[in-house]
Length: 168
Image (cartoon, rainbow, N blue to C red):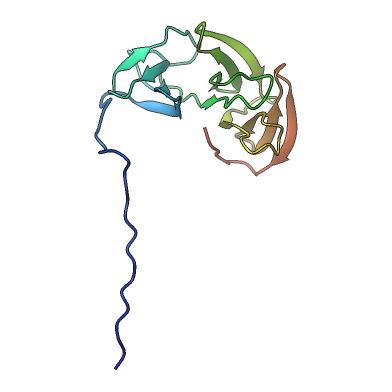
């Protein structure tokens, strides 16, 4: 007789008890800092860039970004591995533009723009492995991938095809 073999069922494990918080906030992108979350928002009546405490409290940062309320803005936080981007410094996309956000003095400045007439940022992240010098990487909606230097210059490094989406 053949003995049935039990199959392992994957389980989800949490470090803490998950609980819903920030119920009325529509988040476009989310990034984690050691002590809080940073988020871009979508919708009327709330600032575009907010921080969320571990208790779920949302606080506006007072940083003005020229994005429409319904626009999804991608977000990337520097891990501080590149000399030109301090740890915790943020990059935020608005259409084809990339804005550099300093969380210490709470300022935002225009930083770079994708080339082309109808291209938008589809992915934004920092290279955390080092294959691209720990620089920010930008994926355009056309599929072109760029490395972004500290002066705001874009260097084309590849292409993944139109319609690609990436990390943010």
